[in-house]
Each structure stands twice: as C-alpha cells, then as structure tokens.
Image 1: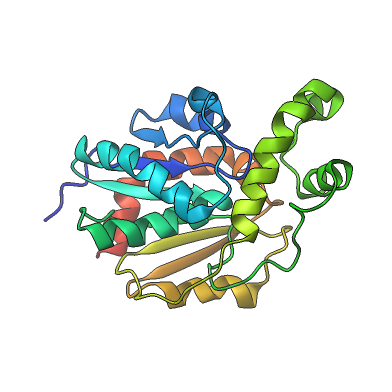
Image 2: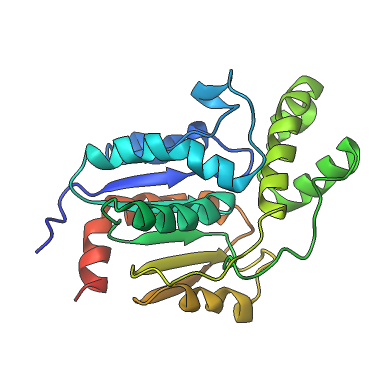
Amino acid sequence: MNNYNNVKVIAFPFAGGSMYSFQNFLKSNSNFVVIEYPGRGNRINESLIDDITLLVNNLMPEIIREIELCKDYIIYGHSMGGLIGYLVCHELKKIGIKSPLKLVISGRNPPSIERDRKISHLSNDEFWEEVIKIGGISEEVQSYPELMEFYMPILKADFKTIENYIYEEAEKIDLPIDVFYGTCEEIKDEEIIQWKNQSLSEVTIKAMEGDHFFIYSNEMFFINYFKNINSHILKSNA
C-alpha cells in the first residue's frame, strides 16, 4: 500500500506565469513546488522556449530531481501548465520514472481539442487586448508600459507554444485525473468531458464559479484541496 503522507504537488504555471503565480499555495503548503519555465522568475536570464516538445525536454531534469526527493507525488497544471503536466506524465512513463499518484488539471481543455482562436501572431497591441479579455492581467501591469513590455515576449512565446501544439493520439495514461474548469471561461461541457478519453483510471470533472483564473477566486478551496490531497487520492483509490 502507498504511504499517502506528505505527497508532493509538482505544479506547472499558466502562460506568462511563474512560481510567483502560486505564492499563496507555496506559503500554505511546504509540499507544493513549482517548476519554473525558462525566461522568467529564477530562470529570467535563460532564453524563452516556444516549442512544447523542447520545453518539456528542458523541464524534465528538474522534474526528475523533484521526484527523486519524495516518495509520492502528484502533477498539477493550470491552463498551459495542464497541457505540460499531461505531456510530462506521458514522458515519465516512456522513460520509466515512477508515475504520479494523480494528475490534476485546471482551466484546460483536453489535448485533443484544438484551440479555436489563435493570437500569438497578432500585433502587440491586438495581442495585449486579447490577453486582457482572458483575464489574469493585473491593473498594475496594465497601467505600466514597462511591465507590459517585460511580459509581452513571455506571453507571446507561451501562447505560441500552446497554439502550435499538435495532438497525437497516444496510449492512455493509467492515472486518476481531477479536472476543474470555470463556469465563465470558454470551455464547453461537451469538450471538457473528453478528458475521460485520456485515462484508463477514474476522471473526475468539476465546474467552479469564475472565469479562466477561477483558481484565484476560489483560492481557499484549492489551497485546502492540495493540503488535503492525501484524502482525495485515497478516495479515488477506494
């Protein structure tokens, strides 16, 4: 039987995000760790990567180090991070690294659903307008041109990474998946349910009040969810 005490949460941020995007999760849970992408946060001096295969390969050494430091772990990702988390699970299986106990996804359609709208090719002004519509850009960032200038190449690289992803049908992962999505984001019920086609194990789907960044408007729910992830894992394995 697995020991479900002190399960590590290995998290992947959304487009434009970094470890600072999860600062309250990090403060509240010593077992919560964030994998930083190149070109931001503590990897600010590294070049941005706008190809998802190259990005996953770049992240794997750090992910493997985190796995080696714990007994049990789960993978979590929001939006772009959800897609990366899904691909990481496949990569871990391919190279023979011990699998996570669970995959947790928020704000992300199944990988088989292609994005309807692509924006990374737009002019900076048009791109910025579209990103603001999605949400998650603070008024502080919107009010200071120098902050916009800083985040623009990061966001464009991340959106290009997502938009150029081409789904290739693969063997289903044998992991429980918990999927959360916002009631006011552009995700359709008939699409989100297709996450059930990605796993041989139980897939639980839950709608949360809010837009694409519902993880913040429901922050205490998710802080408690990850702090008590042991009980969620036990329940899905019952």
